[in-house]
Length: 171
Image (cartoon, rainbow, N blue to C red; front, side, top):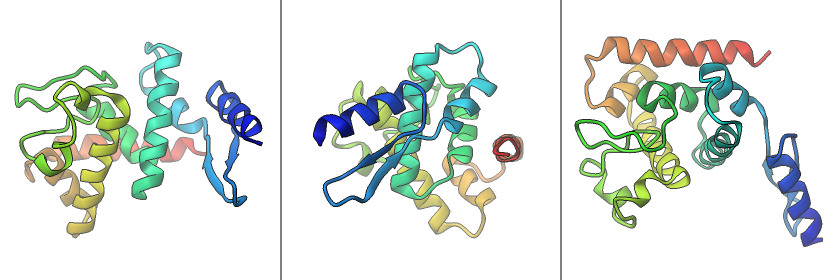
């Protein structure tokens, strides 16, 4: 049974939708190619293998934190342009531009270099975004908190417009 589950996961990662079933016959993860398609749409120049890797970790983190992939993809597009090694002048790092000083509690288990790792960075970034959404009155306010500045109108507008465009592509 384990080889069957592994084969389904590998097939899914290589390009199709797949269901992974755990011991109790409950779905664990459904690979959805839409997230990778969104990234390819926004950044057609990125290596396809890298796109699939980033999309997989976005999907996993969104599933864990109850977020829409469209929003997270739009946020990553604005924050790092899908460059895992991105670092800002304010020392925010990785795809989601996590600020280790502002989020010591979420980053303390990782070395500075591990914060660039795609699953770590996207997981922490999605945890931060989920926390801000839960504490805010609106998505606009949550995005302002994520950036660290409520007045960043163009930043929030860019993310929301890109997310809306991706939602429209869902079809």
